[in-house]
Image (cartoon, rainbow, N blue to C red; front, side, top):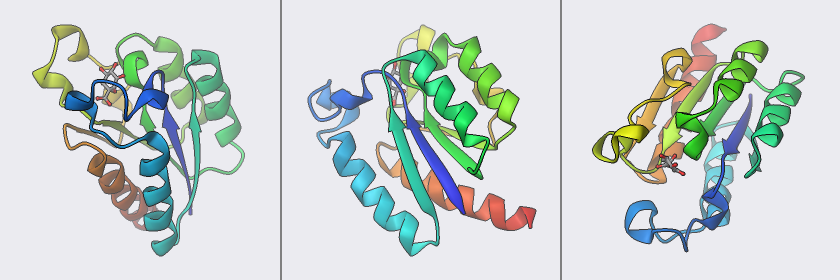
Length: 146
Ligand code: DQA
């Protein structure tokens, strides 16, 4: 079972960036813990963080070769990117959208997602635990497909 974790722009700044909104742990801290949880659950986790839309799109295209499921926090591209939506649809890999913060309790421009209606599910507002829950849900989703 191979899962790709994608994190969009400014998530490399976790730990420093608005800690009252996003918490004090770095992305490296979060990914290290997730890798452990993944391996305990028979999942191979790869991860890409990029501040560039085209790099996220390229990673989605490459995932076509061997990835069973994508967990994506598209960050600000959630609210702007038809291109990332189209990339996900072009590879037809099931995905869960994750946000650390509760985007619905924030500015109105964060309430709309270009990805959410095609996702298996959306998790927001639960901090880094959201990624963990997404891993469990990905595992269950893939097991049910067999
Ligand atoms: C975010 C929410 C987005 O609105 C914001 O642009 C981010 C992070 C989150 O994880 O809460 O960069 O995706």
